[in-house]
Image (cartoon, rainbow, N blue to C red; front, side, top):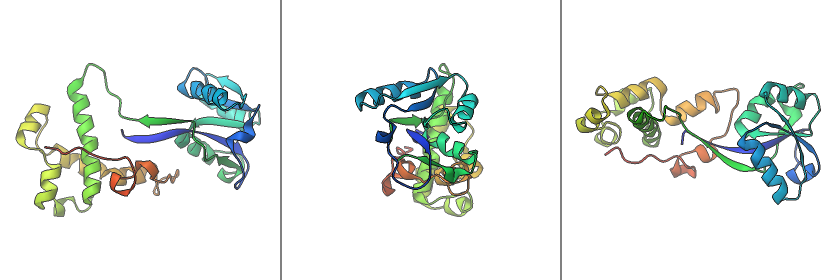
Length: 218
């Protein structure tokens, strides 16, 4: 997986004291014909909430309806809700994303179903970025660290693997030089260096209590 997300609920308000239980009988904005809608209905039934989904085809129109007060809450992936808060009238602090999570939403790269070689390459590039972070290899120190036998064994596949994948030698190093390790990529797009400022959480390395783990290259 590239990113482990989860379905959350956002409500107007500030501070603590909000919970999903307080939404019993409430109208909740949710995009039509999505797994998000299915999860909301299932969660509502399982917990006796009797929420009233307000469904729309268009995400922008649904967002507009929520900010106009037509719903008491909005449910979507937590990362999407975090981005929505940045556009909220009155600022991000005018809305709260509740702590409870409705479902797991793991996300990964998508490629054409009939292109197995490309899928394999994309998957191993991701593994390379994760392993590089575990080893402390970054874009900045890559050239200095690649001489370390441990680093080289972990990040540079042998010629047989490279030929099997049909790529030019050095593909893992080019990926690292381009994107940085997984942590750098996360921080740049989702974390501390991005407007979203998401915490790593379960997207942290397995050595830090997260789920990110790369199998050995060999």
